[in-house]
Image (cartoon, rainbow, N blue to C red; front, side, top):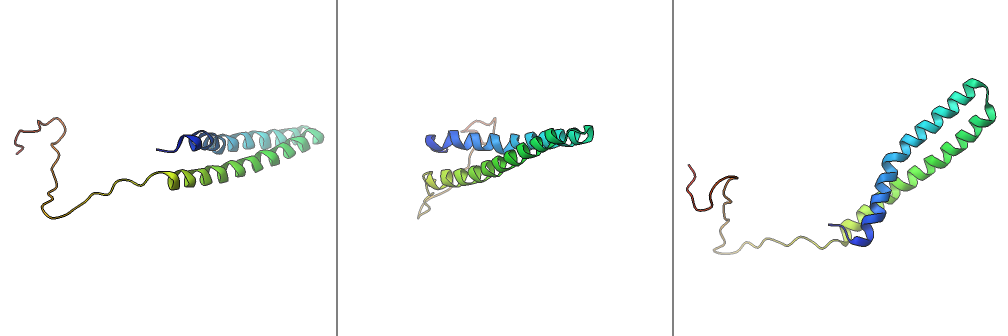
Length: 104
């Protein structure tokens, strides 16, 4: 489980990583449409906005990767299973089985 202080920024970074490429493709498509219609000024604005969205996307990608690494490193290690003399592995009953019943 991730620490509470890292969970919210990590969620926002993942959302940005997933949604910003869609916004980028829409803005670039609009720039192409405006170029085809002869609106060079509008197309230039859309290409500038696409550059900003692309930088935000890369920032979100780096943030998601870094925050995930920090969350994994900050989590407590899982408990070690000790195996020593006389320690036998218990077999878990199959799903739907009764704990004391013999299985074929």
